[in-house]
Structures are given as C-alpha cells and as structure tokens.
Length: 290
Ligand code: NAD
Image 1 (cartoon, rainbow, N blue to C red):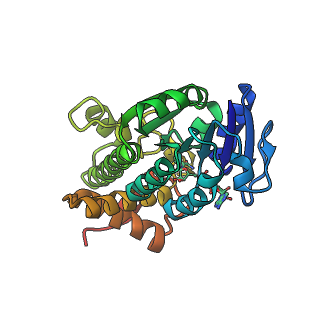
Image 2 (cartoon, helix red, strand yellow):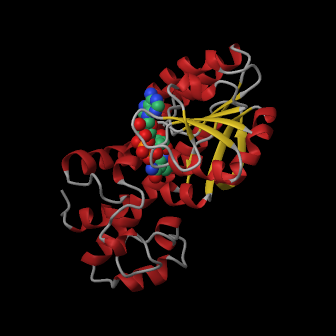
C-alpha cells in the first residue's frame, strides 16, 4: 500500500518503521522528528498524503489533529482512508471524520494502548471507530503495527473506548495505591497484602500486572524507581479527555473527576511530572489524612 504518515514522534516513528519494514511504501512528515528507517521524507504534510491509499496520523492532541486534517484532506485522493491513531477528544475525532466524509474520503479514529514498547514491538492494541469498509482497508496495517484491533463502532467509538478504559485505569491505580498506603499504616506487610488482594475481589490489572509496590508482584516501573512506563502526565491527559467527554455527554463520573484532580495536583504541584503513574503510592505513603 501507499501510506502517508504524519507525526513521527515516540509512537509514530516506530509504527511507521514497522510498516516500511513490512514492505509498504511510506511517505512521512513531521515538524521536528527524524525520519524512521525506510520512510521517505516529504516536504509538507500535503506532499506526504498525495496518492496515498491510507493516511495515518499520530499527533499530540485534538487541536493539532484538526489543523493537520484541514491541510491533508484536500490533498488526499478520493476513497482514501484518513486514520488517526492519536489520543484526542471525541468531539475532534467526530469533526475530522465528518470533514473527511464530506470530501469523499473514509475516516477512522484508532487510538492505541501499549505505549512506546508496543509501538516498537508491533504489539499495540487498536480501538477503532468508523465504517466497516474503512476498517477492512486498514486492518492489514493494524496487524503489522499491533496484535489486536477492536472495531468499536461508528466515528468516535475508538476514542470513547480508550478514555473509558483509561478512566478505569486511573481510578483503579489510585485505589490500589491508597490501599497499600493504608495497609502500611496498619502494619500489614506489602507482600501479604499483594498475596491476598491479587487473588481476592480487590484484584485488578494495576495490582496483579503493574503492582505499584517495589519488589512485590511481577516486574513493573515501581521496581525501576518509578521511571515510566506510562507517565503521570499522559494519564492526566487521558483523564482530562474523559472529563471533557463526560461534560459534553452530560455523564456523572465523580471518581473520574477526582482521579483527574489528584493526577493534576500530582503532575503540576507535587513533582509527579516524568514519574510513572504508579508513583501515586509513594505520594500517598508520604501523606497523612488531611
Ligand atoms: P510525541 O510528542 O513523541 O510525537 C508527536 C509528534 O507529532 C512529534 O514528533 C511532533 O513533532 C509531531 N507534530 C506535532 N505537530 C505536527 C504537525 N502540525 N505536523 C506534523 N507533525 C507534527 O508524542 P507520542 O508519545 O508519539 O504520542 C502521540 C500520540 O499517541 C498522543 O496523542 C498520545 O496521547 C498517544 N499515545 C501515547 C502513548 C505513549 O506511551 N507515548 C501511548 C498511547 C497513546
């Protein structure tokens, strides 16, 4: 396939490299990032998408996606698919899909989980919103870049799935960390706490697979000085998107709202920036009941 790839940063770079390595012809554009191996440099975003069957974008946020989409949509060939893999707000995803459709294109929102490691290894999970036909066109590319692609529904459904999942993740991480901090103060050994909770009704991915207590459970960022992993500021971004969506859909999400506020404080006021999102455990450990 002829592919245009816009946004070749930490995630987009290795994703584009994997597509080129698999034999696809990839033209890339980024404002600053270097071209990954096998990707042809285009001078502009419009040049990168000319003649492409599929255009992939991996950009920082919805505002940038909207501006890139406004530039590339008129330059794309009729029937091509614009597939955005960034994590953005649901409203931007839907607006870009509408614009693409009005221009005779197909569109998908396909945010990912799996992080930079998954992007390099080609083991991302894609959560996809858009039409069946567009999904079928891009599915072989999802297979190269990832291990799983779930077609979640119409435009915006991929972003909706992503932020709902990550709202659960943020809330659950906080619950796991505050419970460990309470257990500490009750004199309960952390390993015993793990042994019980990981096999009881309090179990979760954050406890069982990504335990925030160093030396307990499988290896996780806690065992590496809380180096990310999944950085707290990325969790804050996703929690803020969940709250933006909740406001827009008039949904009551008190736990998500509190999680967003706690990560905001952690990142902006408490040295959490650059720390893994499980570093909430030392944060709670260092505090008393206010
Ligand atoms: P990044 O900042 O490393 O990459 C973004 C790239 O977009 C940069 O290279 C930047 O130069 C480029 N860019 C910005 N504006 C542009 C424009 N107008 N034209 C062309 N290029 C432009 O970020 P990342 O970590 O690769 O994340 C990308 C997206 O993936 C984000 O939406 C993020 O939320 C999401 N995501 C990241 C992770 C992660 O672990 N890093 C995990 C899942 C999802």
